Length: 270
Image (cartoon, rainbow, N blue to C red; front, side, top):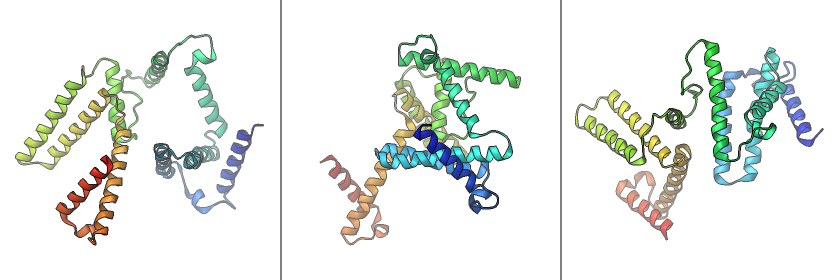
């Protein structure tokens, strides 16, 4: 048995002990599928954060935490008699072999682009089969789960629609759409500014900006994550500058905060 297999078996044993009704951990025993979901999502983001930071040591730990989530679900399912960890592993093994016939059979695919087309075709066939089983017509949007972060889901919905020709022709057209959505927000602000209307128009603007990012070949979730990190870095520096001047940031006022912000930007350009 390989070291990895032994380590996985050990993790499965640890999880079983944590869920032992007589001697397990009270917190682990209280959990169910729904209660674990927020932890799974958080762990996935912590993996992304470690990758973004280029911290390989942290990534080791975060990947372990994410794997533990999978083991947790498998243990609960095993207790209920639904499936076990072996079933999870068999499912992904079979799926990867089926989706890579150019690797595991005689089919020839000679480029990453061709592989992407083949992969998407295979997934589309799987979705069509599921739709037929459910007795409904397939949609290009099938399988875009609602639990995705809204920005990531907007990007995925747009990509799916684009595959069957529903798309802007170029980035210039999308830029015009972004400007149109901004104008509609301005019109609402100049009028009665109903909250429901503002909410809808801001949503349309965000959807259009996501479309623009896609046409510029920018992954919007990652771009916004980096923008968040930049803002946090700069704002913390603004606070440090103000404190060095003997000013409490909460009492600084917008003019002094803006001056410190411009100083931070100048420091970064230098």
